[in-house]
Image: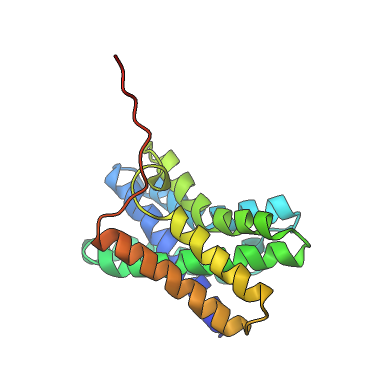
Length: 204
């Protein structure tokens, strides 16, 4: 298993767990929590494949993603009281996941002859749409719109990946540099409490 595949699988599991945890905080039943965990894990990749015309979407072509998500859901239900205490570990896997999803989205778009700026959009969509679906279904403002440096980290990492790709850097090193940059940006943002400026309304 190569680095990107491992990161993809780890991110898929982390997204499934985060979706299930978010649903549990809203007191949803077993089916509701499972559904939100599932769509969180596959939402970004499914939208990307549909937009690219790459159908059937990736998780339908084999049992690996489906099995990973199901295992993650069962694992979350059984060990919920322990998992809820591992937020830092989940944060790390989530960050690894969005790094992998950003790269995978860009790569797939480039394979379809999409220009670099639009390939960046595909990478960003792959990374963040699952979380947007999760938060929307849980009746929350999506995290990427109001709090953490999340999408911005994916954009910067994606730019780095495209530049390295443009200059012919070996794919393995490009992937490592991209994921490390996304992880570093998110960790620094959390540690230093960084966020993008907010639009404020100054009424009379």
